[in-house]
Image (cartoon, rainbow, N blue to C red; front, side, top):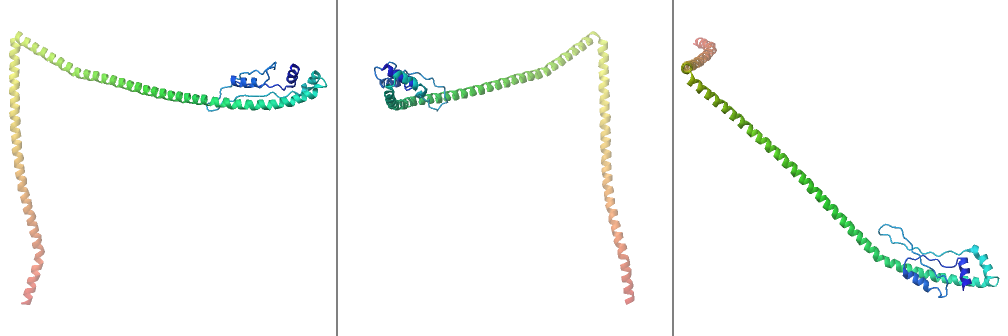
Length: 279
């Protein structure tokens, strides 16, 4: 059995299978006899990451035969063992076909086992997409809220500035008016002090004030008299204008009558001449 296994190994007829699940390893181990010194060993295959929606493929391979080692196998088995080796090769081919069927069944089992995992991965990806979308929506809402807050702050700052400007504009006239009132009060106090300190100056000021009032009164009287005279003259002019208008209308009428008489004169003379001739 050991020489047979070594011959199969030399010929490359032993099965080298790459599997990824313990179930496949158990199936392959059960296909070998218990006395096999070197049962096949399952090796884990690291599959590269693939895009979502693409099923992960399981790599199952059988090593091809090794024709250059036939001579060496013949030397090991001898001249009499070539035929038996050929028969064993046929038997190994049958076993290989059976192993391939087992491997294909195992691959189907693995694909069926991977389908729910793939579905869960898709669901997790969908949940992740939903979470990311919700996060983006929340971030956009927060950005909008921050923008509105900044706009409100700017508006409030502008309102505060306007209020300050209005207060300054309102206080400035009040300050000016108060200042002028204070200056007037100071002048009145100064005049009062001067009048009390200098009676002569106060008398002169009173006399000048009386003269000023009398002058103003005389001017007002003269102005009123002049106004009355002008009004009287205007009335006379209006009367003269009315008389002139009537005279003008009278002259117009006289001119019209004279023109009509001049137009009727030759006709009347001609009619008189005809009347005399007829007589």
